[in-house]
Length: 285
Ligand SMILES: [Zn+2]
Image 1 (cartoon, protein in one colour):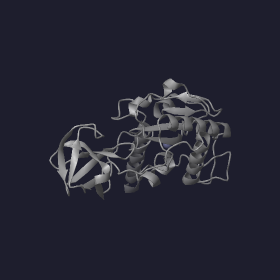
Image 2 (tube, protein in one colour; image 1 turned 90 degrees about the horizontal axis):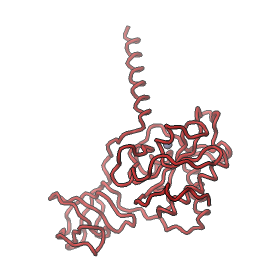
Image 3 (cartoon, protein in one colour; image 1 turned 90 degrees about the vertical axis):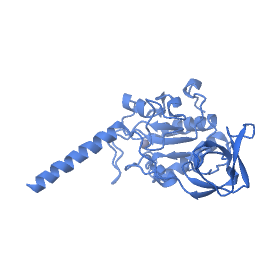
Image 4 (tube, helix red, strand yellow; image 1 turned 60 degrees about the horizontal axis):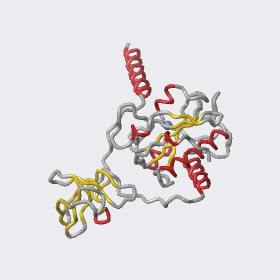
């Protein structure tokens, strides 16, 4: 396995890995290094971008805004290339992804999910182009990664994502835990136990500060990696931890508010708005 240096992987909780291409050249430029945590250049050389710690827990200034509304506790790893690529008819442009780069990306990804014990699954290890379908989070015309220029037989986000996941599993020898799809954070759930202990932390070793009666509805703020404990907000305004198996989902997460997208997206949107405005003026005259 290609070893990326241990100090590139700080010990913080991370729950997902999202794969990308940069849409730039084969070498990582300063914009690329600010947008992702880890990169692989066209010749397979790994590069370190943003410190993973900035995306752990609360997003901190300078965090890697790699995926719209899905950056918290998620690592963004990218293959450098696909500048000027066109989706249809497909044209990979002057910096197509290479096989040696893909293989290095697979090994790097396997090392990352192994280190952070991220289960390999469609919601936990996925390409940017799969985010909308697999996580239900709307993205803006993202098609990375939908093509492998060195292997034209594999087309489409799901197929390429499955190939990535299979190859990561193969590198790791199937040693990772099975995927569990826990209660989604942001949903509303009902207490099903008679009196559910309300604790200061995710475990029976934490003090119970009270209990919630059956039928009370809570908002799920977060769930532990194991899916066993949920951090909830009660109607009375308290926040604490309860055993997730005594909750029943009532409603899924509300649509999330946009976080800060890549600044270049804002420029594009502003430019488009300006063009629309100019065109409207032109047509009005
Ligand atoms: Zn992307």
